[in-house]
Length: 206
Image (cartoon, rainbow, N blue to C red):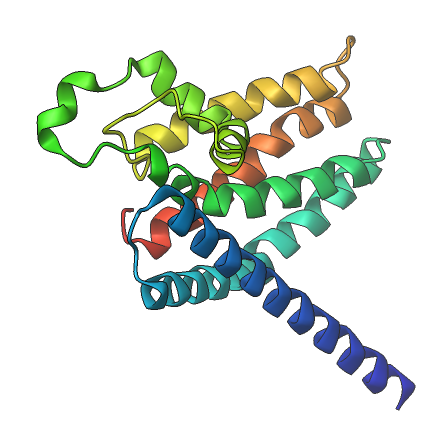
């Protein structure tokens, strides 16, 4: 009986976390919509948020959780404490799942403005440093970049994965590299790519 109560409490806690995340994401995009004058209907924001949260929750249960258990076991086998990198990896998964939509305020939708499109370097600076540019928007700063790129494609997924791999090398690439450290180096790219890919799956891009 105590075990059943414990399982029920865990389920209730996870459901509460899911609803809290859904409400936060919905509030964030509604506020971003108002501040950047995107004119996206609130109903569309609510429906898309619900769809993405549901798909992300399913991916967490079916993909990320089993992968996390394997990652912990592999880390233990190689003699590395990988709990910190696992936690960061899960955060990167959640962040990456919503990343393509975070960049919507910087898109040029008018075809006549294509001549003003940013260089490839600036485009991917937007992708890599999205929180910085969102912060500029939030603080009434002037967005310095505009692009026709929508980042909902396999190319952006690949470039973003390489970027996360380089971050992994910076965070965990201590010399000499043990097998456990190599595992941690690739962890951010793996979890982040899964998150980005699930977003593309929801939008039926891939």
